[in-house]
Image (cartoon, rainbow, N blue to C red; front, side, top):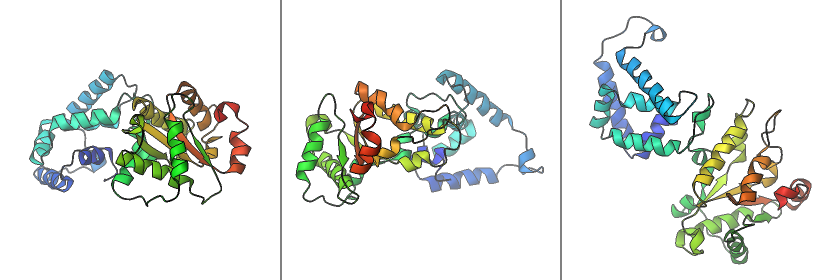
Length: 290
């Protein structure tokens, strides 16, 4: 599965997944066949050892639930799997480092906690990476607006600009222009190593059917932004959607999760909305408007 955690980690290492798949299949063909139905096959000694190792990793990481990364790493440590990985030019030390980078400092404290590793990549789009790859169109005639956004972002406090204008006037283009300037180095020193990540509120909300699931996703995104130590600038288009987004009984909406980080200066973000929506939602919330 190309969207699986294993594929994500192995792709990150730049190895040949097709070669690995062929090597795995070759190994499986050489194993003795099983007569019972697949769901009735008991775990063999290797699988039991992997589960035991995964539980040890869970305890070492301080997790309350067994996570997919722990199980994946435990399986990779098995002798037969190590051999297959080695034949396909993957080293165990590289895989361990890649899994560590994916986890960051996060703890798995819920059954779905491991689903939010690398949440920025999952729920956001790196505009600086897009600019480097030539995927963004040139921005013409917005120099004054881009310079003003840069001035606000470069402040020590109150450094979260919001772009207000009717749909289609070019609010997103201003942020894309900022990303292009970061690529060529035409920004203050404090912004030169920054990433501009466009947050997809729709993706954050989509499929979050359990109470607190949206809240958990957004917390994972904000934790990664915090760990980036100011090197990530979050772009929130349609910022008014934050008011009430993900709110369920007993859960906070997105705006209330953002406010403490904004107040402490731990989050740099750019918002975009229309004048009507700004007046209707954001202007009424004094803490958020500040």
